Length: 260
Ligand code: NAD
Image 1 (tube, rainbow, N blue to C red):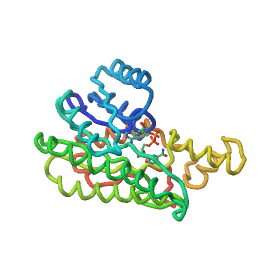
Image 2: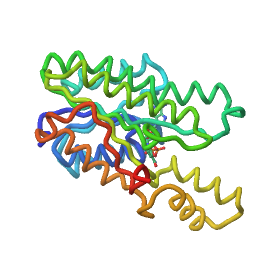
Image 3: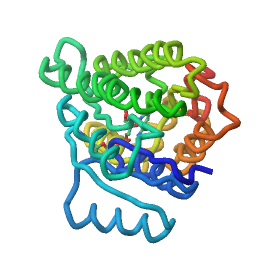
């Protein structure tokens, strides 16, 4: 179990990050939440997790597109909870447009959050992990770290970058008690994907359930969404002793998307 371990999960006020934060808390870890949202709702989430699992749960509202705030998030976790033993780099955004229409400002924003923030988080958390001789770094990449889709230039570039960064950090930490792996989900029904479903529904003028089925049907052979709980289970496994020799891997959980 992860009792006495502290996990920082970025972008954990929603979606996959929240599922992973819940699973780590369920395994006994103290958790520092991060992400945007309404103050009252975040406090409810924080207190709810602490009560449900009997662990310490904190929150830091760092904007991970800003390197100085990432430093502050890691420092806050170390100061308030004593360490960062598990770092889950999850916060991410999407922008969908053909490359010639892709706004340069959106390119910069996606790269800053989906790729550079992963570097900055690791950069700041690694010294403490090395001192303690134990650490787990989980980078939430995507199937788009392995394959591409049209109209997702920045996202695909960032996620391929995350898979490469994961391998480099795995090599640099090999033999230290620290592992670094990437988790690569297919479609998960979160607000990030709901926006894409809504865009299909409105551009094709079809009902939302049909747009949802089209989105899944185009890529994911299982015909079902991966769930945040399932990804939480994988995260807990990667933090376990059984996964001590698993490092530099990028693990697909994609309903068969990349088997095609
Ligand atoms: P989501 O929109 O539900 O959640 C994103 C989280 O990140 C939220 O908590 C949000 O507040 C936070 N966030 C956004 N911008 C931030 C910023 N600048 N600083 C700090 N936090 C910020 O999205 P999700 O679908 O759960 O995505 C989580 C991760 O999983 C992303 O990296 C995404 O690329 C990846 N992913 C998602 C899917 C999917 O199908 N949903 C598939 C593969 C990979």
